[in-house]
Length: 339
Picture 1 (cartoon, rainbow, N blue to C red):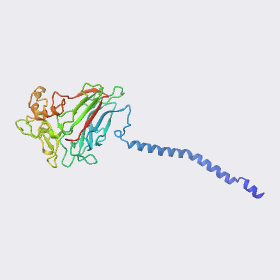
Picture 2 (picture 1 turned 60 degrees about the vertical axis):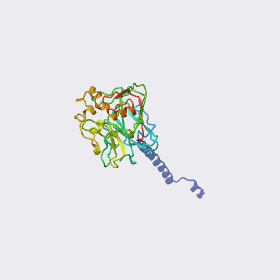
Picture 3 (picture 1 turned 90 degrees about the horizontal axis):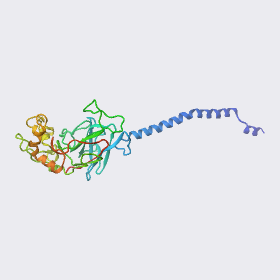
Picture 4 (picture 1 turned 30 degrees about the vertical axis):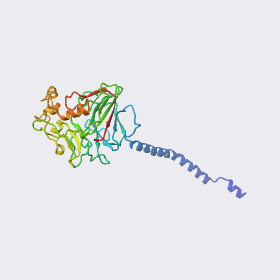
């Protein structure tokens, strides 16, 4: 009986310990749950932060829309896309696009002013030390030979404010006003060219739905052109500063006379007597004087009109200059490898 009573009887000490343990667990349970939730939240935040909006194809919202897509039309080489917006890179710099790859660049609904996009080629894995496109700019580095003359093939746009946006960005050219509900964009060869390209426009817009400059090869750049009495026999070919024989760009007449980088051009001002008839700075040259002046008869202008119809080859050309489209229009820019 004594043995049975001992087995079946409840010890006050053991019972107290059991109750104490349960009480401690109940008191600690909220802290344990909170700690687990905190860890899960941190993991989620870290995952989200690692995804850049440009890289995340599912990044679609009312505030950001894929109004611009840039593609790599090369057969095998990578291109790197550089940009700036209102003098500051809005998107990550030097986004690599492998051959055949494209990326959407998400434009805020309130608009984005003064953007420029150009492609770089022949770069290292970081998108620097490029053979083509290292012309500098905010967030960009230059090779040891210095920044290239800025003759890049490029797409420029001020993206307008979407009609349903509650807030519109400030117009930097008129700070007292907001951006309107229209896009203003252009491609031109006024500075020259580097890579061939196409621009497809999707939406209701008065501008052509396709600008085809895919034939704009560097091999077509004039090896000799007449740039006035002081420079009657000038090559417009821009050579690699290292090997001095590979053509990596093509100057326009104005660029040749005013861009001195790499020691292959001159440093006249656009208004100077030597450059004014080719740069058409107003003043001193009027639009009418420009359109009837010597720039229209250059080999460069003839090449652009033949290879890239309807695009500006010089200031006040009859081609497509600054185009206007409703905000929300989609643009698909394809850059190709040098030819």
